[in-house]
Length: 384
Figure (cartoon, rainbow, N blue to C red):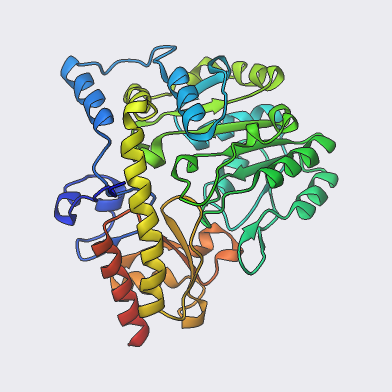
């Protein structure tokens, strides 16, 4: 498989998204989860056709995305999804909030597993609930869910867990056994699992993604999944996510959400997602995965050469690297110094939770040359 080629930086700087407009042109932007690859041809064609037709109105009740995702899930994950148990909305975090509002009482506690995607800390209160932190366990070789800690939280009254599967920022792909055990714990205590699976299509070579709802019959009963094409196909600005269920009772909960939740789906997002999830885009996705597999390994080599004090584990999925820079003495939030003195924009580690002190998150969904330049700048800063 020939790896997908990233666009050149001078062309990327013509983009108007956050990644390319937040900082001056002397800064390499590697903070937000946007990628630098040429878009999937099927997506480009679908959007161009819509613009040509002036197809810019409201999203219809069924733009084809339910069947498209069901087909994608079967091909990529071996997971059989009933299209009738899918509803769409604006984005994954909106789907999470709307589901949490239905499944937990105001003031209930919802478990999150830091270090974790910063909006998790905001969407739980938005749903009227309270965050309960149960950090990932660091085994020395990998990160994993602290099942004992989660069970203790449920036993003490927490009513749900907001799962990140695969996990952002560590890139951890939770095993089927772990997810099945989590489902049993949740069922035992009358809790629910809401699984953010936005990075699932980006699972790398050597890892196997298990959809939470497919982990076990119990998981199908206690769980909700929220998915999107936005990270794998770089479509975040188009606004479309899917809320997926695998049981009559949970499907009834999602069907009970107000119509406005579904109306928020962007038409361009839906059209692009149908094209992204189609078999026509599988080759493009495989080529991107090949590029990311090369980059995650290249990053390890570059850090070993230029910033040997950095600690980095090659992630199972995604295009985000979780890097510990504590040994360099750059403070609790080293991305501040890196931005100021090396002109590389990385995501602030402490925003992911207390466990992010001394850490940064780096986006390697870029060309190898950009990745080399960024790490070389870090190395020069470390030697200064």
